[in-house]
Length: 141
Length: 193
Image (cartoon, rainbow over all chains, first blue to last red; front, side, top):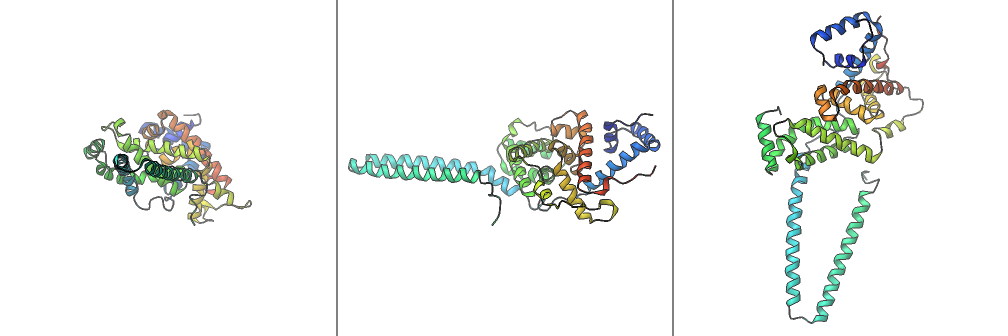
């Protein structure tokens, strides 16, 4: 092999992706070619530094299973809550409508309840949107 | 966890909706996943969030997974996509804030010549990783931190196997340039003729 090594050849050799014959050819070439040997040594040293590099602090602390499990089971909880609330609200509304209360009183109580729910929902939506777009949300006190 | 019939059984139970069967799979794969995510994102907290997202998304997409194949490469591919989404969305590069904090006359650390502290040298490599393009960082992390074969990297990164070698070459050159710019002398040692 008289030419310089192709980059891909050098990478495959460095990473042990070549068969024995091809590796032997490259070793022979590296023994003769200073330029390719220099390139190989530099990459080899960088590779060793990367392989021995420890994980950054915190990356391997504790399992993520608890958080994953909470997120997997959370939708079931929400589903039950929403279905339960919907049924309960429908039953309460029906009971209220058929009850022997004055129509004016029914309209007044209905307006108060609907208004309260709308206000609460709008505040919650606003807080949620602000939280999502807050650039400082990850900064701890 | 080795690729065994045990993993396939657990996957089938998960597909049937049994979330408890997912725990051994998560515990077996979370180490590699956290290393890859930290390598790609730089920040350990962001990495944990990305790994959690990837596990949840993988569970929810199990109906598209072939239970006869190994789970880890599939998970790493989902994780890789999630990390790239985060990087694109936040329009940032790993460690830029750290680099910005370096003084202008920062002369780096010595790396292999013994003039600097080894821990500093490794931190410098982390910073240099943050300076290179995400597609380069991705293959380096999968190769050097996770020790994947070219075929596995191709599967995770969604590129032809032939492209892996050339991308690794450019990634290593880019990392070398970044390290030299940061004053790391370990990549510029002279070699005996």
